Length: 144
Image 1 (spheres, rainbow, N blue to C red):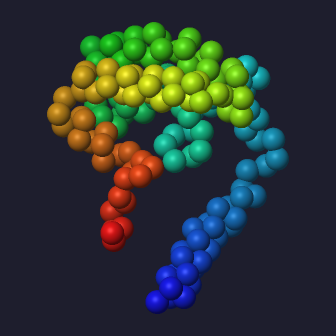
Image 2 (tube, helix red, strand yellow):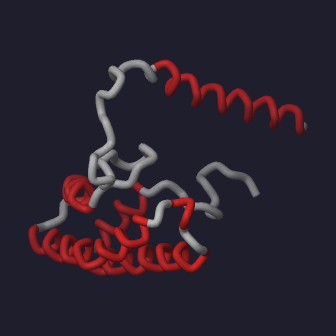
């Protein structure tokens, strides 16, 4: 049984790796250089990079149908928290202390709670469906 699980796990990993290696050479070298100021480039969910606040707001507006009032409130939240995030991110991922990591998690959590308070119940549900399961959460189809 363990060898079957191992075989299936390896096969799944190979299947997921193939598309990324198949399309790896589609963009020419240097096509999307990182921004000079070190800011996050808008990449969208699931692309391994964080979206900048403007791109995140645009994405939420498109996917959740935010009205102008909601957009203004969420933009204000992002602008309020931006200096704190920038200060923590300036240290570099490898240089963050445990206290910095805790502060970052708390900041993300409080910002998410503030944004959620602005959304309608339908928008909250859409947002929840768009998010991949987090660490420690059961993924759909996982057996316990």
